[in-house]
Structure formats: C-alpha cells, structure tokens
Image (cartoon, rainbow, N blue to C red):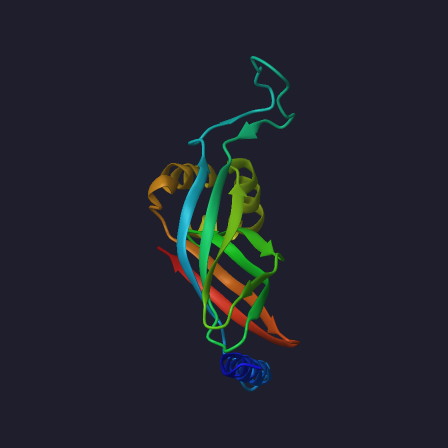
Length: 199
C-alpha cells in the first residue's frame, strides 16, 4: 500500500467515526427540552374576490341552473403563518385550529390537520385557506351573533356589506381567537395557544 493511499484510508476512517459520533449525539426530544415553537400571523391575503353581490332563489338565470336558495359572492382569505422551531431537532405541526371573527363577530371555526415538519432551528410558512360567502355569514350572524348585534344596534346585511366591500383594504379588525396549534416530536406533544388581531 502506498503512503498516499494509507493516508487517505486513515482520513476516510476518521471522518466515518466523526459522522457516527455526530449522529449518536443528536438531541432526543423530551418534555424538559421541548421548547415552545413560535406561531405568528405574517399576513392575511385576499386570494379570491368577486366584489359583493347576491341574488334570491327566484332570480332567472341567462344560462344553466342556479342553486334553489340563490347565491352570493364568495371570498377566499389566505392566513399566512410563520412557524419557527427553536429546538435542536425537527418538530411536527400536527394540527391547527382557530375561531375567525370580523369586528368581534364570530364567523366560523377553521381546522387543518395537514402535517408539516419544521427542521431544527428553522422557520416554515403555513397557509390556511378560508372561504366565506355573504349567505353563510348571514346565517352564522343570526345563530351566533344575534345578541351582540342587538346590543350594538348593527344590522346583519349592513355589516356584511361593510365587510365584503372593505376586504381589499382590510379596513376592519380580523381576529383569530381560542386557537391551538399542536406540535409533536418523538411522542412529546406541545400545544401553542393562538389569539391574534390583524392588522
């Protein structure tokens, strides 16, 4: 064996030992060392918007067949979250949930069970898509917010009109309340509460 080949063999063997040692030294997740991941709302983006309109069930259509109850203009909001993992090991975002409010009126609950892995010490972005219509919002308004509307003197369709026309400028407060983002790592679970006002 030549001297050069012998040196290379020693180098490769040494590197193998170092790599094996690094793998062996990887931090194992425990309830004591599991640092709380950080959840921040980066932005709310209007990804689909048709303005504000609705029609009743008796309206004639020029082509095709309209739904029996009528229709109303859908909007889709993208809630972009910044998820930071401060740990020395990857963690999984297992589920996300929050209640969506406009002007302190509850509109719907948002759930997402699509798993996302965040590498050690890194930041990922998680996007939750939420679609609303004036009709579904009106129904929720009557079921969950009737008492608040009476107390404030707000009329449901007036508020809905204000929201739908104000969405491009985000001209009213949007709240995410009683939210929970559930993370796990090697069987260790941590739930991060989320209560955010945007903007």
